[in-house]
Length: 461
Image 1 (tube, rainbow, N blue to C red):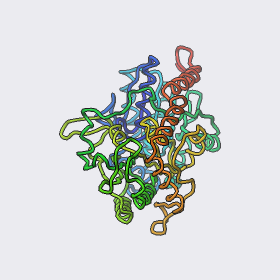
Image 2 (image 1 turned 120 degrees about the vertical axis):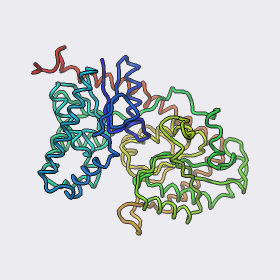
Image 3 (image 1 turned 45 degrees about the vertical axis):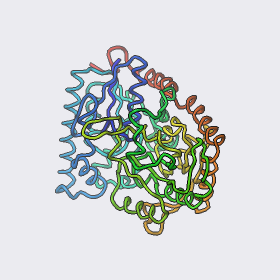
Image 4 (image 1 turned 30 degrees about the horizontal axis):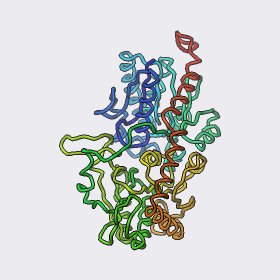
């Protein structure tokens, strides 16, 4: 059996791209042949430029769908262009299908996020034409994005109703958390399967090797410096300000860290406590300015290193490291996101065997906390900051202080540190591994294909 995995982008460090790589590996282990279809020109098997969410045209479609129709004469001219581009996407998919004849297509976020409406229409028409099985992997829904809750016109409203997601016997719906499952049932009246993010907990450990051994030196980080890693992309919903303030509280107690740490190295008054950020910057300059200002106020040094990291190691014009290399040099992970569909970076921290400072965002509470992982918590409530009511957040100072105290306690104790990370790893390997994903995907494939009779879906001629 051949399966096509499709998304706006592949081979990047965003959560959807990472999950696609995991599904690909698990499917291949099951004996299936996998191809990638995306808007990424230099990665995967097939490239459709109209799917590239980094293009100006893509941003224009979203802007006119949810902000105002400013780039077109009226709704009709806007909808005509959308339909025209959708036909281009459909034709490109037809050509790929003629070459590959895949049995199942798995659109990732194409039928859920609400961006790239012509892409959704093109995929829908293609799937309908060829009577294909579609497993809609819905990582994020448009109703979870506040700016997508106010369509600019009837055309967009009807598109959201029809294509996000499409419903039918040949469509299987997959969501990544229980909150999305309940909301999808409420809004669209359809059932779905929760497939949590997973990780290969049987893979080789990330360790210091000949490739990454120079990373600390290259970043200007001393061998005894304490490194906090913020491995996520840089975006406002990641609430990186909470991590900065927690580290600020730890720095105020720096004297408590002097002496041997959990791994035996001697921390001195001359050594630094740093925040290391290798993730993609996907936010406006205002948020970066705010973080830099806050870090200066808190006395926290940030190592910005997006330019040195990618999905994989590479050594073309400049030596680049994988995101996994970043975890190797970290002592602690900051993961203060206030909103996540699930939590890839949390899984990575579990695999890397690093303790984590976390904010208990809604999906963490419903889907992750029940597993019994041990963390340093910043609680589950926040308020908007006075200087920016819509975006930047804060938690009670007492929460930051308590988190700082607990973090120092862990950094100073070999027993506490390793007990915490080893217990977490054991739970994750049992519940959130590739083996668990394989069992779930087998059930989904079996259910999806029960509508076929060897010749296709009922009604296919």
